[in-house]
Image (cartoon, rainbow, N blue to C red; front, side, top):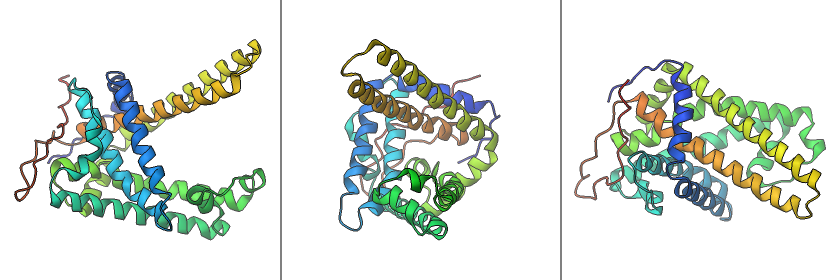
Length: 283
């Protein structure tokens, strides 16, 4: 496994590539993203441990979208079977993904715990517990400090886990090592990832502007059912943009590491039959 250093402009290529790959299979990728989010939402309903279980599922959900995107890149339509990608590569990698999920849950809950030092846990209760967010609470200095602290602390956590699911799944890297390699890869390509993040902020901003224009136009026309239609449309647009963003993750993985080969059987268990990531196009 060899790390690649890419120029900063590659970040824009990742954004454009994610959008292009998404539109190869828009219905399938949208449905799969919705299913992954629905599964995590259902997990939160478990008594006591629900939020922690949902957090632990995020690396597997990310991997599912990476595998689905790899399928779309190769001209195939991803099926719901990719949702089980983390569970079909033998016991060794299944355990590794479980460890990765547990580490992510612990890291995220630790961030929420630190944020509670600023506001007594109000932000954590809103974010994890579904507590109502009032205007008074949102405008309080303590709540805003807790929110910014959580956002700043989440950045290194996201860098640790960005490539980790793909490294565990396709390269067979142990969980802790995958976190190290992921962090090194993102830091060595920080310019590209900065451009990548700014690119997606721009795309989401354009989506928000487009919805604002449509909302104003519909309101001016006086359509009676406008609020319900606009609400559904905004949710659908947000999900679609989020699915595009998740689709692009596999492109960052592809360009930061040597193309992974199809995994061999693990101790007599099923071999990795999911799509391998296609190599980057020749320049």
